[in-house]
Image 1: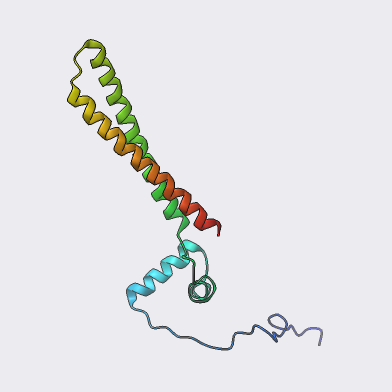
Image 2: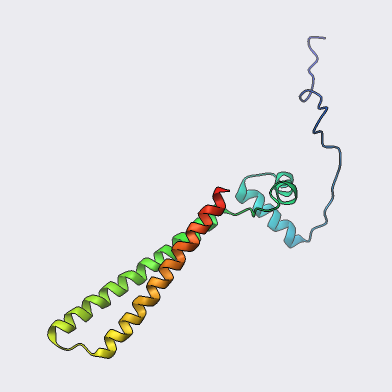
Length: 135
């Protein structure tokens, strides 16, 4: 009897999965499921269990994609900030030379105000995302 190997672990008395649930998916839906399986690094069954039972109030997020989008947004805001700095330098130079028009300052102040509002809104959204991820 020493040469016979037992397969699997000990017999489960509690938590044994005995019920089968089937789902019919279109080709597109199945492809999406396979992509999620690859990107999140979990099996299809674990993905379905989490989506259906465990985290019903939570949303599974592709963290890599989220970070890529946040990075792109930050880069865009950085580029806008740099352009505003260049524009501000040109305005300063024009003012020193006595060539500054009042309309130019009004437009610049308006653009700067819009940028500050967008920056604050982005910061607020990032803080909300971080709070949701911490739950």
